[in-house]
Image 1 (cartoon, rainbow, N blue to C red):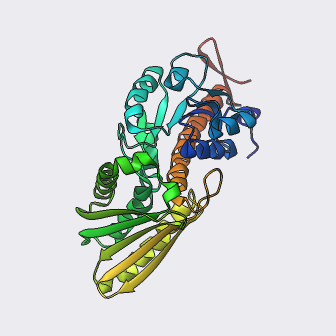
Image 2: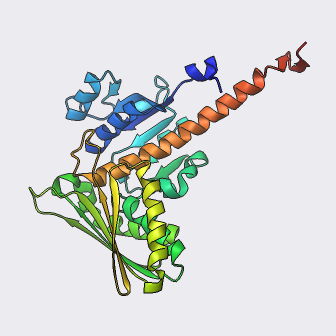
Image 3: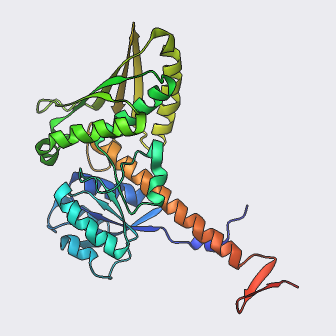
Amino acid sequence: MVESSYEKGRQKLRVGIIGTGKIGTDLLMKVLRSEQMDCELFVGRNLQSPGMQKAQQLGVRVSDLGIKAFEDDSHQCELVFDATGAEHHREHAKVFAKKGIKAIDLTPAKMGPLCIPALNEQVILKESNVNMVTCGGQASVPVCEAVKKAVPSLKSVSVHTLVSDDSIGQATLDNIDDYYATTSKAINQFAGVDNVCIDLEVDEPGRQPTMCTTLNFSIDESEHMTALEALEVREKELKRYVPGLSIETKLGGQHLLVKVTVSGMGDWIPAHAGNLDIINCAAIAVAERYALSLSEQKTSLFNKLFDPFTRIVGGRQLANA
């Protein structure tokens, strides 16, 4: 089908980013590469920070006014990624809601429903604020859901995530109980597994291991192949938006060991920091789903207004001669 002039000229989704640290700046790089989005505003509090400096070099509009940058109407943001902290997001969410701006929350605030792109990316279409769970959650939840579907009798899972010391923020460490609770809640919500053990290990300085989440399932040997087939499908689904992800499995008696390794894309954070990359890739996937929905709506409206067989004049629909 030949693309119309309208489709060629349609605008990308205009997004903002608040939080100019590692996560926010890496998000910026991913947004700039997206075919569905443009970064309208990059917001923090220090114009001299590395993230702010990089954004200015790239010609992106920046502001050091924090949430106040979104309170006026000088921007045209339709969606904002919040890469600050939970306490800050609780206040930010009020501004976004008042201004009618969609929010993708990468903090532990959990103001909106939990979102895993492989499982419920469509939630962004009806909710004004969605939460991206945790880095370990983005790796473990879709794996648990796949195994549970293949093995309905599954009742428990243990999840261990190993990350490098330079890829974990102080905010996560300060709120480690929240990390455990949110990850466990997401596994229960999406996979229906009640008995969940979560562990996060930060490796010693200097080692810089690639992010790895290991899941241990207790299942009957007769169900091994069914689970492996489900995981093969799930890996392909995840790699569509997290290209550096890989899944390895090991069978032994009543146990199925699943290792989810994530090598980052190296946009701003180092490749071994896959824990930051996976949550950012997930957030980008959700935003692009929303962008696609808006584009489809606009295209549908355009086609109705300019159908080659009809034309609307003065509120009346007339058949073309």
